[in-house]
Image (tube, rainbow, N blue to C red; front, side):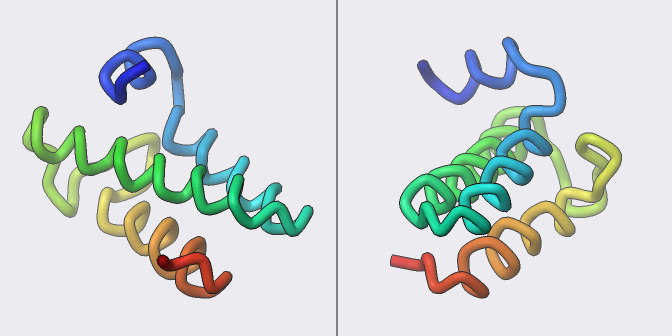
Length: 83
């Protein structure tokens, strides 16, 4: 399934991947957490490239730039999940 299909079939998909990633961190399931945070970044990137979403645009009640900071810094960097 590609990113476009995932977005089309799910409401609040970005929030879903954020919450799942946090859950996996608590469970120390590092690979799954990394996958969730990476998917969140991929979805936001897809929306930016294909739909013209800008940094200050709101996605699921949160600015795009805040989502990226959450996934990148709080999700990946703070949990040593960067490759």
